Image (cartoon, rainbow, N blue to C red; front, side, top):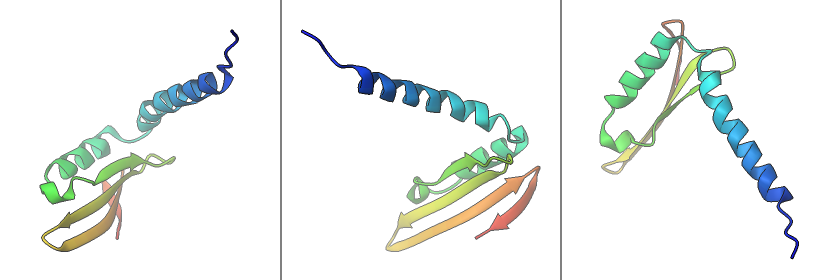
Length: 89
């Protein structure tokens, strides 16, 4: 019996590469900016649990704020680069 594992192996390899790339890419960000974003996210209320942070190619830490509770919704964005908030939406 012959099994074709090419597509499954390819998917596994791509998933592994993506997982390895994300932490290495985060290293491009200022560690203080990452810590500030983590602190900010940790202080949000439970209704904002869908909020997240990402790191842009230039090292900017982007925070997406998503809140939904008490019949109200909010979707916001904050960017931090080298200790300076560079964008608020």
